[in-house]
Length: 316
Image 1: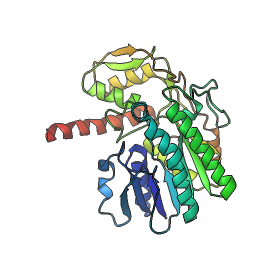
Image 2: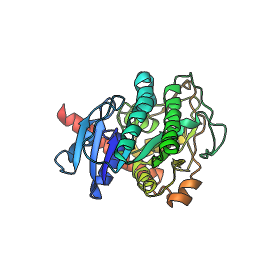
Image 3: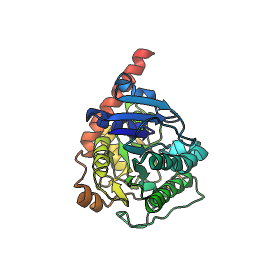
Image 4: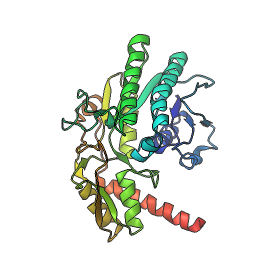
């Protein structure tokens, strides 16, 4: 296949590029590097089946040649990113989604939207099934991400119904692994970096809010399977095991050997108190369930962050 991945220099997009290239496909990565990093795809630059296109998908897109798939992963995706880049976040999930859907229509290609569990907002239903419409504050600080992703889903379904476009929607729940950015504001990378540096781990609220954490290879496998089925409504992709933020902090300190303490700061506005996917649809439709437990995934992720820290020290 010849596949275009928007946001392909980002955390998840780059892992997806790795997987597709390993299976012999042709991969075009399009990224404006606003949050993506060339380092994530540097290993593929000399591969004749790989091409990097430096472009902002919120602007008109031109790609030469045929495309079998467009995988739309471009978007700031961490709280720090979309709070610092609110307009860019809304544009990439509205104009960018419109542009990539238009390109899919012109090329006759299939289209996959990387959506998010944030469409559920601060949910009142647990766990969250795809049929739940969510509890979102459209004018709160997180609304730029939550609402633009909800719009992206609606626009994707409109192209499917109006133009017969072959589309998929995957709703991503918390994902972690190598290539998380050091300062991206996600709880896993925050805790690991703080623990390795011997600093206190920063938790918000009382630390009893819960999350589910899926390792990136599990998520990539879910998306690969989603591409093989003809199903157009959203599919949750997440780990159904629930952990409190304090439990995560304790595990990180154990695995890093850190003596860091947990300190508490006020809970950010509209921060979800519980986030847990119902993956019944993914189990039935994709025969998919995560296989990497949190301890194993954290060990791999911590090893990667240690290596990055060591390389930084050598460079300095």
